[in-house]
Image 1: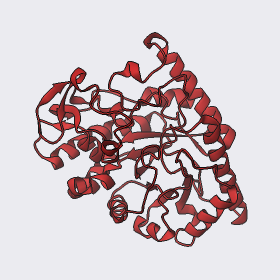
Image 2 (image 1 turned 180 degrees about the vertical axis):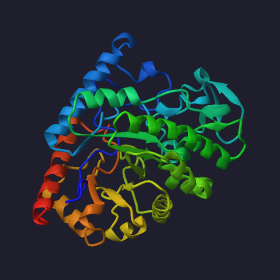
Image 3 (image 1 turned 180 degrees about the horizontal axis):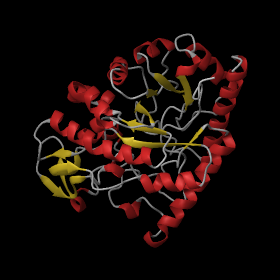
Image 4 (image 1 turned 135 degrees about the vertical axis):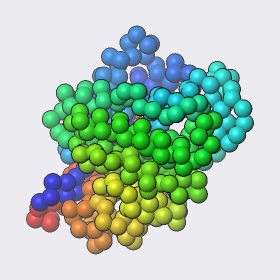
Length: 363
């Protein structure tokens, strides 16, 4: 049996404890509004949250284990610490002048669903010089994870298209140049993670879907440059947005085009949302020869825990298009808004479905 056949894993964040974060303020610019723990106790509290996330994944029986992104407020903002990006002075990403971070602290809120649905806020940190990698951003997180699990490790890194769209460029003056500069800097982070022992590195690039017209000309090359020379297995993830903010997802033809962009790149796998949008197996035909990490858990706040039989049926239909060795099972997207108890039951059902399918296939 190939090593990763029907392997189970998270694709982003795990449920975040309410004692750690204020889930009503996921976009708060002032970190003190997001973290419920005082700064002097925050590192230890984050360690504890990671240990809980690891324990839940191991108890569920997932093949890959992550740190649940417990240290991150934002999957994209966590990587805006690259050199050349001014995180203190924010600018309008569509061309207006700069403003101090303190002046835009109330620019958006969780209630501003329209902005969240169109790719976060207009304001963003400002590119003021050459983008450069100045040292590891997430390697210490991986090292902590690997010290506390014997299972295969998975980590996530922002993608070049998504980071390019979410910052304000005042230096390059060209989306292609910016994306490729970001890709080269992120490549050094990905190489550092591989050297530190990451088994699977996922590149989160939802703007390949959300802002396709802005990034399509450079998307495939940027992804390939992000993973160039990386020994670890790599994947690229695209989504429809957090289920907390988008109650009703519908299949979008642009999603298939985003899959084709990834399929033409040098990443090994494509991670897609599948369950909540209601995709059918035909979408998998756009994956080329890549393996697919298939989202089979609906993460809408009101969605019930999936029955194992339902997950098996959906995966079995996917196997009509993909051979087992090219299929992996996962939730749709980030689980951070779900109660931890429900999140754990969902991933347990996912792992049980994988085991049943392997038995059914004689693997």
